[in-house]
Image 1 (tube, rainbow, N blue to C red):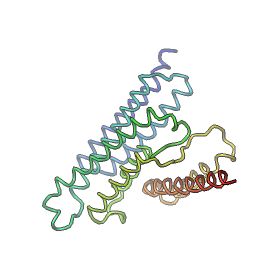
Image 2 (cartoon, helix red, strand yellow):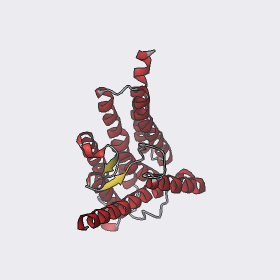
Image 3 (cartoon, helix red, strand yellow):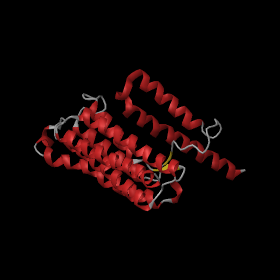
Image 4 (cartoon, rainbow, N blue to C red):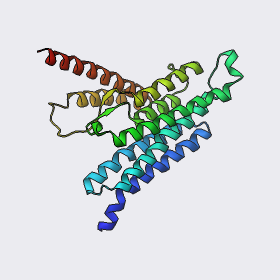
Length: 241
């Protein structure tokens, strides 16, 4: 029984990797809706592998490395293929349309910066209760949701999508504090931001279902930015006192 229990977290991590691979296959076939479902399922597995490891007390070095590898595929390579496929079909300005297959390579900035983000996260001791930079699953869910919701008012031309790619790549490695949905306790005090975000996300999901995930990710970024500004202001005032 003990031996079987030790395999559970890594099995869930392998499912994360599997669904990430399936998202790549769906992207090859231009089926962005199916790709987004595979991404969401991979994200659920990514959450529950760590949860299972803590619950069963089965943390291991191989589990940590396997998790990073799975995340690099599901939240790096998979969104890269989705974006590469999308950039080959999105409208480009006249002069750029002749070079569209080459311009589409910009999509692979996301896998590169996702790998940098994951490597940085593994050695950064500051990210135990919060994040520095945008987590790779959040970046991937944003683009998967955006691709599934076509035509999308966010992206009318290819250059807008390229700007989004570069912006999100920067966010992943920036020294930008972002809150995490990690609870030390479940009381209101100290968790106000988390509960407010969860409540707003739940309302949006009830109203618009899963087609609103990209809005939720933008909301997460905006709330994190506001919280960081307020925290910095408070620290400045305390120093002045």
